Image (cartoon, rainbow over the protein chains, first blue to last red):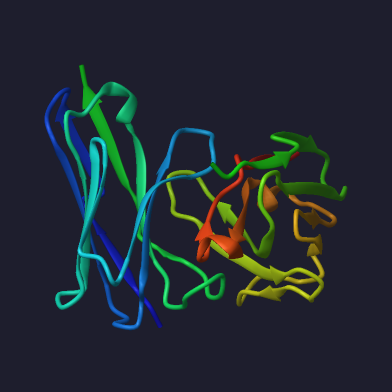
Length: 114
Length: 116
């Protein structure tokens, strides 16, 4: 089955710097890759996602890149702010539509220091 | 954007009681609903998958008679923890999938269950 590895487990950056979180997946049939931000005591919030027919997607300060050949995808946050501090999870899913379930990475705790 | 509500947000109960958690997708229809539990500082663990009108499919190690799932409509799913024990204390999160949105998976705000 699918296995998702996420690195690093913790990341500390200064406000204004960029942060990069990387994930690899094992199932070449996976075709949907969302990223979630989880603040303490809250449910995960979808921040960006990418599908296998796209190599890069950007939404303001957040971008995700996908390398299908290498089976890895990355989250890039530019101009980080203290409110970006949270745990970030990457995930991968094999099926299209609403079938199949997400396989999650173990999470990255991002700390942005003012 | 997609809005998911979960109720209650926190519950404290005595050992042996049952607790029902409701999850609603407020502005979209969820053809599929996932239920997760999450222990402190860990990732999400899938408990079960349900499709509207069908019986839920449980992950290995999750007792179906203990965690009752009802996906009665495209906007409402419930998880009932029966005869709760302290080891059931956890953060429970529902996750509806918007079928009409090419399968985007959203999450509820979670329910913190504490069993005394």
